[in-house]
Image (tube, rainbow, N blue to C red; front, side, top):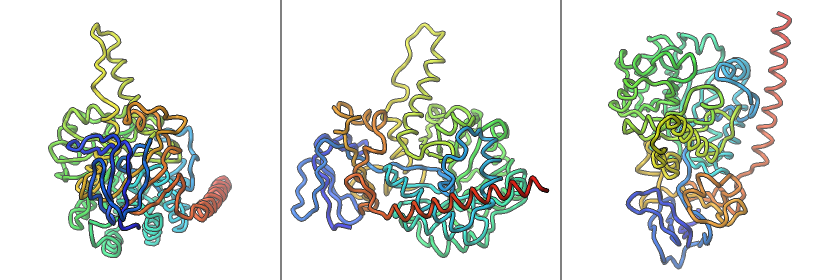
Length: 455
């Protein structure tokens, strides 16, 4: 980590409403912190990064990804949500060893950094033994990403873990992980509890896990209102009946909320994570961005599973924008008045990928915008690339034009993790490990199928 870094003469998208956009702007970093943002900043002893013709903005924030599935990337391209439960959770998950979780988290986190995602919520429902969470956390640490490790349930049996389950996520091990790795809530890695919730579990299990989160001061993250099954359960209303609408709970997907449930989430200071590519592709339901915003909520974006969709934020931003615009145009088809074009803007989408994500992971005071005093999670996008030049609108370039190849520089906590378009980590080692895990898991799946056929 350089003591001082000056990113000079870029088009700075601060994502801070007070600072706004700064063409030909500078960002000065000292240690792990942004100290100045403006024009013509002087720092004679700083390492200078020339950002002329480039866009500078805060790192993207992915508020929900099952990173452990990196080793089986693309294994279920045509899957619906129902298929996913069988093809991934019932087939692959019970086969995972700790070393497969490590390889997946290391490679998956490096994938995030390469794509400009500097903060990740690792929704880790693969804790089949106590060694599994240790391996997951080590992978995140070795990658150097900022992450929220969301300790989830085991996945040893679909029937035992997901259908009116009586299996409680082991409190003793959650406490061990909390004490061992997360004594502070201000580090590069922090912790949450990933829970299944009502319908997937009995009420007794739900109460036990919510009380665990409360006692250990852990925020909760939960999938709700998606697909034909959970979409009908009204899980938020169910939690309300149980008296478990805790503040700062992140509700993922939310595609089939009732109006009452939207109101309950807003009143209880809930947070929203939406994964539009998965939701459209796998049948969860329409991504509900505008609905969330109508209730004063600030939705964020997430990738979910690379078994079925890409792992970058550019795909999610474009899908989110297209989905809401499609719904708007469809609703206006029979109306005489013109379509309102300002209901959801490209800038709204970029906020979801940055400052709204910081809000959802409860770190808006630390990340999500290029604000002096915040941590230096910064990305630089080359706007002179063949797919972006000439630059007219920097927000449009990021949201609607850019891709992973345009991410030239990435800093996390003031430390370079990507420079000149190349990851600084040992990607070859990570690739070898995750490919070895892929080979093992595919072979183990075939052995499992053969044994089941003989039974």
